[in-house]
Length: 528
Image (cartoon, rainbow, N blue to C red; front, side):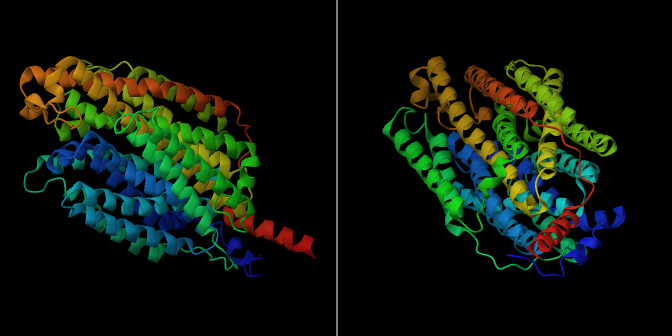
């Protein structure tokens, strides 16, 4: 499967000025801003959404998990298609799906349709997540990527900062409400589609292709089966039940079949050969563990602020700022220093150590933890995540052939998202189980019978409960949330170990398109 002979020509034009690169990335940045805003806006609105739509703690988890699951399951497919079809068209398609999902979510009459809409949003977000990094790698040499990753870090930071604040204000404003948390992103997404049409210009590689749909289906079903088990175990059925045996066994068998199919496919969704590359394999393990720790722990912080600390959605948004600023500053500064020095491993190791510290500190929180102290703990976690997340992708992209850039990037994103999805669903199940157990212990039969409104499976609306019950519920949620970060500590240790074994290699000075042109020229000359 060789490309047309015209391919070297666009690659020769690849080294463009910084101004042109920024213009081309403008639509990409708006698209990233929208997808980040969508997830962070909802975080502070979720307790109110669950109360209004009469959902349970399990539903709370699934509203987050469904988007992550859809994103995770489709990232490899988007990444593979990026190696085969127009990246520009694929990004616009992913943004279009995001608009559709946002509109459905904003108009939802119940939690069931909301969960479906989150799946549609997740498919769109999967495209943006995978393709933004692929497009950057195609246009910009790894040595220069740090600088632009820093700009994306700033966009990430602004989106993450603005999201909880906007979400909190929308929820607390009676004439707007939580539905605008979903509808707000629609005009931004349309602007991103228009900007991409006008500014993004990448060569399209025409190839005879066969997309491995069977592999994609098996990966999706296998991962989904395990995620359904991790979300429901300990709540709907016992961890050691026949349901567990069936779901875990079935999921592993389907994934084993997926590996067999992928090993024989002409164009596999996840090329198994890339895992022979030590950097890719270790970066993948670290990315998955970072995803578990980061998403699994932090997604429940908003609930901790509002239930355990009794804060309003707006104040909960403000309380998340230290972690966001930590992430923003560390990712931007690390990106600039990597571009300046060409050295990157030190930042990965430092990020792992600092993230471990943040997890350990957050495992000590309770219902009486001061706001300033909580802010310091969250800032430490944010600084660690900021140094780790983008630079793991950079290390892997730098160490693979240009023709595998799309697949490698999507594999790392896939495993990070899968780690996050497993983290949210499994730790969400742990949280729901611990809350139920602790409430039953402290409130006795009254909790099980739903006396005083304290149903152990529902997310409580503390404004409607008597003061003694509120105090108990706040202590229970604080204790259960701290335990989630305690579970995250050994996972972060494993991520740090994986990072320590990654071997540092000099950053390439050619863009993905230039590297691809050279690889094809070399293959063509050897063929002759």
